[in-house]
Length: 150
Image (cartoon, rainbow, N blue to C red; front, top):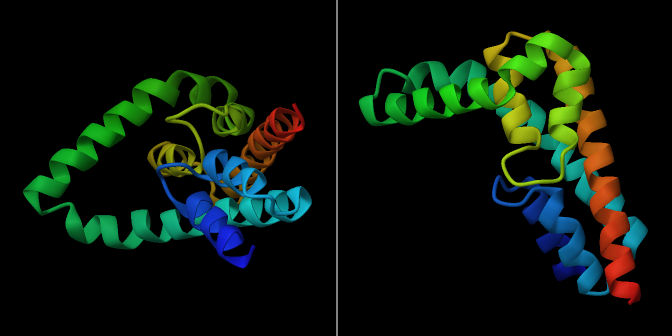
């Protein structure tokens, strides 16, 4: 059980799944669903300060390296085109709704990048991301429980 819980937490920290993968994995392995929800949610929330540290400190040092810059510009353009209108129009609520969508390409990683690019105040961006992660995790948790119950 502890290995499955740790694996779920690692999925929730990963940009390849976040809690959208961590929660279903843990529930499918028979870990307590409430424990899975809480730990995966908290692990996913932890990504925001890590991403902001990266974007504000490490990103500035790596941007002069050509291969990194190419990828960073591509990610930035993709984030702005995918979220730009919504976040500019709805601000805090737009960011929370974007992170809340339980589909690939949305989540705390994209939300952190968008908050950084649109220079949203860090505290507001954190709260918007946390709200979005909570509702996204809740949707995935409810769907996972209902599928396991069938």
